[in-house]
Amino acid sequence: MNPSEPTPAISAEEFRKFRDFFYRKTGIHFEDTKRYFVDKRLIERIQATDSDNFRNYFVMLRFQASGEELQALINLMTVNETYFFREEYQFRCLVNSILPEIAQRKGRDEPIRIWSVPSSSGEEPYSLAIYLLEHWPRVDEYDIELVASDIDTSILEKARQGCYDKRAVSHLPEPLLRKYFSALPNVQYQISDDLRHSVEFTQVNITDLSQMRGYRDFDVVFCRNLLIYFDDTSRRVAAEALFNALRPGGFICLGHSESMSRITPLFKVRKFPEAIVYQKPR
Amino acid sequence: MSLVKKNHASSGNADHRHLPRDRAGLLRQLQDASPDIRRWAALDLAAFPDTAEALCARLEQETGLPVREALLTTLIKIGGNAVVKGLMPLLRSEDATLRNEVIEALQQLPEAVSPYMETMLRDPDPDYRIFSINVLANLRHPQAPAWLQAVIERDADINVCASAVDVLAEVGGPETVPVLTGLPGRFDNDPFMQFCVQATIRRIQGHDA
Amino acid sequence: MKRVLVIDDATTVRLYYRQILEAQGFAVEEAGNGYEGLEKALAGQFDLYVVDVNMPKMDGYTLVRTIRQEPAICAGPVIMISTETQPQDANAAYLAGANLYLHKPVRPDTLMLYVRLLTGERGS
Image (tube, rainbow over all chains, first blue to last red):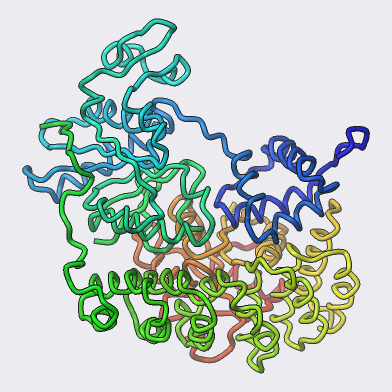
């Protein structure tokens, strides 16, 4: 677009039209208060694709066979940051509601298996480990196996190293930072060896059913902010793979803005005081 | 006790895949009494695209939700004409759950469905026409707006037209507005139709109310 | 203020019910399919559910059956509204647990008559 041309504006009705479409495709809903945030990003994509106005851009977005533009927009609309204790209410739900229910039907010699996918650079699985050790009173009564996987091998290497900057640990209470990390030069923090050795990191593509054959018998899966990036068919395949990976009665936690309602009816909806989670029928 | 590291992601294997995975074996297991065995057969039959007919036949009788989902996932993966031909008659099923599952599967097969769309939209059964519009609603097909406009020009059923109007709110262009404007008049200015048409014109024009 | 959850996959249909109900002093929330309807029903408190039959992920009958099995929400009245007009369609709705089955399109006064009846709301 020629820089001398006026910036395209998004009307309120166009915002609503886009919001409904985006919600149907991704399950992500924008409140009216997010209007400025959404408009700004839409305008950015309208200009980047030389679409002139919202109408032309929307037609392209809606009918593009490859779905590439929708992907670009999802990346722009989702803040894909990761840090320790992100969406802590879900960890609270895990120790207060989910694990007590799982423990009830487990023998003492049976391990409890938890899977974090995508693990990204490790903030989520290590947060799980810390949260369990700190907040689940029965943590010493069970063998707890933590598996963490990602499709990206370089990010997995980072996760195994377990070095983080100040921002990543800013939500951690100071005593936990002292207890589980050692300070490195350059304001970096490295997770303790004990924790690094308690998480198994593996590489996997969850839409590849043959790779997924090795992932079974999990009691809880944290699969946050992953399925939104898939198209309808891959999402369906991923849902089958997650179903296979869980034990009957096992639970799935999705990201804060995500819902199974646009993905699959395979799982039961369970409402706990802290969160809504999904359960494989027993 | 407490946190322990395992060397492998899996702790066992309960997925019944010790049974033979050849075509004949899987087709037999598709009729097994155990839902788990049927589900794994359905998933593994994705390797045999010529089993579409058998998968559709199983889908029609299958009562287990996870098995049906697996059958549909495999049918979508196989795709093509045989799958669409097998699924289309199921839109006439008495079973609302099955009908809606089939609509979603057909939405994911745009190339294979589109040659049938004209005929589907002219079916004598208005419910079938509505389901066809539902299929169209999520189809990434450039013909969609033209097909929908033709529906609101000719269809005598108010609910068929209202379904088409709803989809046009997302995919319609300015050329559709004159046809929309005339629509409520064909249905005695029914308040529901009037409302839908106004809302849709607002969406198409992008003007604020 | 009484709260109504409207569950229908058609945006214009949800807007239509919303406009009628809000004009009569009801608060409205929307869901675009049965599964999402179940999530919202479990997360909030509603005095009435208005439910379509044909929807993706979870159809209306399955939703109403599931609502009737969930202790926290099973008591809420349900109006099912569908394009299907055969006697067996209404039967299926009542067997699933609906309080009332109406055919589309519904006129505003008809909708409000039954909404008031089922919510015990006199209206303004």
